[in-house]
Image (cartoon, rainbow, N blue to C red; front, side, top):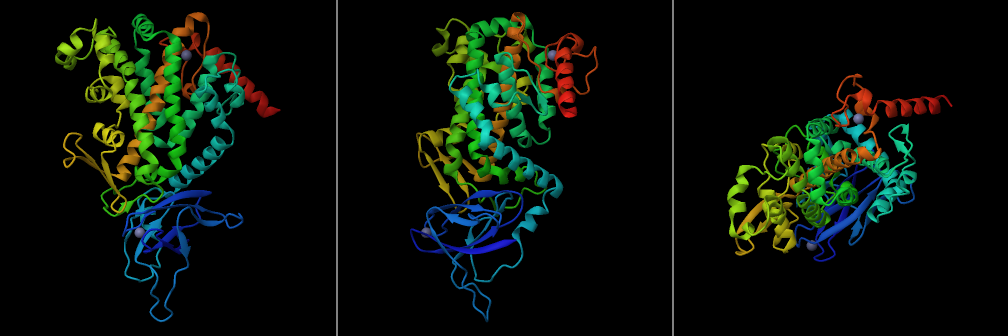
Amino acid sequence: MVIPKVAICPICGKKTYLRIEDGGYLNEYPFRVHCANCRALIKGVYIMGSSSGEYGLHMYNAKTEECDIDSVSHKILNADYVVDISGELPCKKVREFDGNLIASSPFLEAADQVDMLERIERLKYFVKNMEEWKAWRSIAFQLLDEGSVDFISTALRNKMGDYSYQCDNYLKSLHCLQEVVQEETKNLFYEPNQDDCISSLLGVLSKTDREQLHLFVEQMGGVQDVIASYRRVIYVFSAFMDIYPNILPAETYIRFNNKDKEDVGIATCSFGDIKTFYQDAYETLLSLMFIPVCLDNITLRNDFQVYNSTFDNLFGDWKYKKLPNDYSRYIALDNGMKLEKVQLSEPLQQLLNIPANRFLRNGIGHNNIKYDGLSQTIIAFDLKNPSKAKLTKSLMDMAIDCIGLSKVAVLMAEILLFIIRQEVRSENIHSIIHPRFYKKVELNDKCPCGSNIKYKKCCKAEIESISYQARKTTKA
Ligand SMILES: [Zn+2]
Ligand SMILES: [Zn+2]
């Protein structure tokens, strides 16, 4: 169902006919509309469900009125522009309005582009997870963020999916967290899906030489430093959860059959909603990029300090020459250079495939950017020559990159947990990965956790014990 309303620009008074999607599976969604005349950003939230007392349109900074429809011509008399608004689907951007009431639903057009059943399942999943995130799960992440690991498992109710789980060490607590991370971000992964991505990642990691890995961890500063890095990655994930409702249409757009339509935009988001996330995620993930890079060094060149030959010239530069070794030279590179030097031919860097752009990052950081809310286009300018555009990008593409950065955060977190697992094994601290990854494993197969040990000698006992507990609780 489409609800018609007219929003009055608080700055110039021009009126925009809003065609608002009502119904569907979301409980509510944010919306952002730029006035086509003065570009003022009109913000609000739309709440679904006529049973709720809050039902309907809530504007934060503009007034609305009903459409004034001429009884003879059926024209809407009080609107200069028109825009389509949906919380879940990409839809048409703000445009000039000729007064003719638009009867058809704009959302049928978008619905043509995706598998409807899959979309409904995905939305229901999003709504359920988002509710749980707001209600209680996010508390566990706050505890980690503030360094209180002890109560994390209690906060997550000692659960791994449907399985009860005895969290008797900090590593298991981190795994319970990671389980939530995987669950909340499942639909951000699309072709390949999340399970396949994580399995490939653990497959690559399982081949890492353990002695070299240990030397690398020592160089990093020990397991405590790996845990500190995990906390930083998890912070990216928590920040993503705040903007997830703003970029939900982008998640749908990734699945569109035809992505060439010029007039398709995103009505839940403006540049201001996602720029901080983009910048922070960029900095955090690139500052941790040395971890997959060093692991690739181990896999391909048997030494965490031997980099791809493309670094030879760079490291030979006088700036870096005075540093004692290539490891410290790499660490000394700025994040922009680390991004430029990502080697997609190396296994982990290829799996992560970080969707970052330094011009966009610098544009945000130095306020050297222009956003046109009408065309939903971002232009980043050259730092030294402010009239020269370095990058033009649509808001939709930037939202898709935010999804990509979150995916990198999930995979980076998996890498860090893998490292912790290997390092603390000798101290008899052990944790499984999610039970679903063990479904197809045979006794003599390599364990899916990436240990490079046979399953029967690795996670088997623990998997059987939690499956047994799960059966007991189902019966009871
Ligand atoms: Zn205006
Ligand atoms: Zn295992």
